[in-house]
Each structure stands twice: as C-alpha cells, then as structure tokens.
Length: 61
Image (cartoon, rainbow, N blue to C red; front, side, top):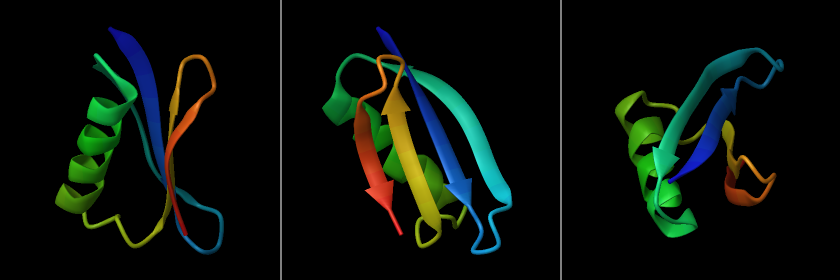
C-alpha cells in the first residue's frame, strides 16, 4: 500500500480539502480521489492527488 494525498482549492487559493489515504495502485488512487471529490462536490474545483513519491496521479482545474 502506498500513501496518496488529495487536495482541492478554491479560486482564491483557499484550501478546501487536504486528505490522505492508502491505495494499492496509482489507478486505484485516481478512482478513490475522483470519488472523494465528487462526494464532497469539489470535482469542478482545482484539485490534485499525489503519491508519497511525488507522482501526480490526478489533476484538474
């Protein structure tokens, strides 16, 4: 399992979400990140999900 970090921001730069979670693969992390963003109505906000190694697995503006 690898740690992933999910953040979402408002247009003014305010951090709206800052969570970490574990996933087996980057693909699974992307799916989990998308699901969490949609559940919190943040998918249309600027967001990113990175691995503990610094790899970007999800990004949206």
